[in-house]
Length: 163
Image 1 (tube, rainbow, N blue to C red):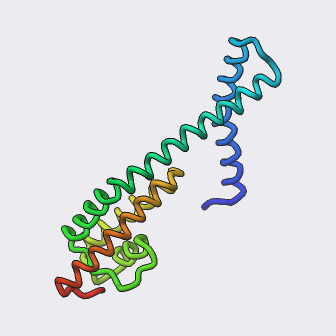
Image 2: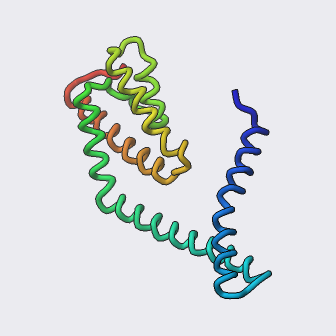
Image 3: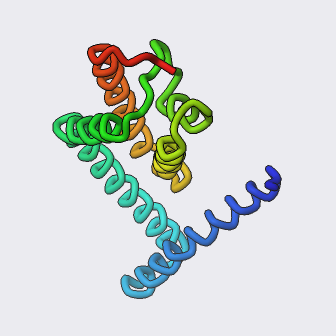
């Protein structure tokens, strides 16, 4: 069981713990360059600006690569995975890849092995968000949407029915 108040306290504690190395680095810089007071605050702010710039560069590059090559590779892998494990054909409307995989995992009509694989994939889709890697989760979801769309076409060509 979790409480919202406990989560807020944990967030504040984690933010404080994450801030400690910045302050230590700023104090070392202040000692080395012989500045004090506002200089320490400036060093902490400058470190966080550098962190933001590095994050921005990495984020932009990851999206460029994903759109250039990564999405195609991920979609091909997921599509082959769905075919090789003989997942049931998706319905004409699915609200998300998570809902499709949940319906597969929950269906009594689907073989147990496939249900377990779907549950594993649900965990894999949820993992990035649980590690605060929202953009990676978005990219995985986008790739899964395209793979499920392609798998639906494959199922229609084979005459396989939705479950």
